[in-house]
Amino acid sequence: MLRKLSLLFVVCIAFAACKDKSKFVIEGTFTNTVPQSKVYLFSLQKESSLPIDSTVFSEKGEFKFEQSTPGVDFFKIAAGTNEYMVIVKNGDVIKITADLTDKNLAYNISGATEADKLQELNTIKNQYIGRITEIQTQFD
Image (cartoon, rainbow, N blue to C red):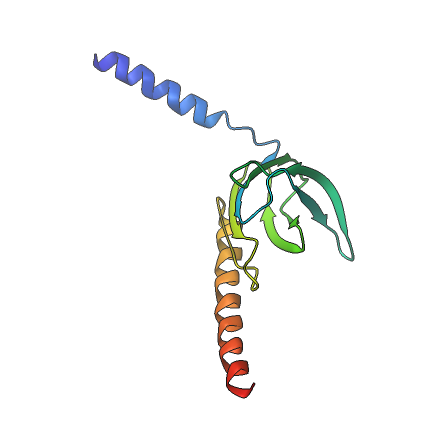
C-alpha cells in the first residue's frame, strides 16, 4: 500500500513538473457579462496596443487565453468598454476576476509574483479612487 502511494506521489510530481512553460494562460471570470459577447487580449507595446487574441464569454462569464511571450510583458484584457492590465511570462497561469458594472474598474489577479505585485498596486489605486470619490461628494 505504501509503495502504491509513493508511486502515485511521484507520478503527481512528474505531471506538475511537466507544466507547459512555453506559453502562459489567463483564465478569467467576469460578472455581469453578456453571454457569448467578446473579450479581447491585447499586447501592450511602447506606444500602442496590438490585438492578439479574442474569445467569447461562457454562460458563467468565464474565458481563457493561451499565448506565448518572449519575456515578462504587459497585456490588456478588454470587455465592452472595460480594460484590465495584467503582467505575465511564459509558464504563468493567471486568474483574473472583475465585475463589468464596477465604475472603478476594480479587479483581482493572482497566479504569479508579478501578478501579485500588480494586484497590490491595484488595491492601493482603488483605495485612492474611493477616497477621492468621498472628497468629491463633499463638494458637490
